[in-house]
Length: 187
Image: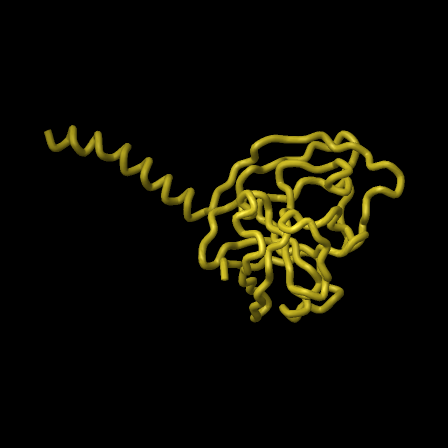
């Protein structure tokens, strides 16, 4: 009888352990793919070393982002939120453009969470420093390679796309701006 209970309990414990590991690893699985289109001449803004879509290239999309914690791991990227900048159209939260001299960010779709973090602050930590930045936009992980997205690919599921003010506040030398591992949390 004890052996039977042990045999039944082991698979349950195994499944529970896997679930705990998945949460700890902050897993978000791809939700689909899109096929890149070549941007019309001069239509993809490569300011801040932004990528442009390539015709026929397959890009992964996400509807989720890793679980948010007090030290959520992410990749910081550089974005312009000003009119004519590489961020494309006005910000999703307030339909306005914003000065890159202010610490502001766009979050991957899952973290943006249907505008639930709009105009709220997050704390970004890296390089031995922290900065508080306001969420003003979504870094779309579900779509891309079209006019609305400035002919750029979809964002990965773990992006905090930041203005130059964020990079400056973190004390990152300008020639190192672009991509950096960070942690962030709701402020």
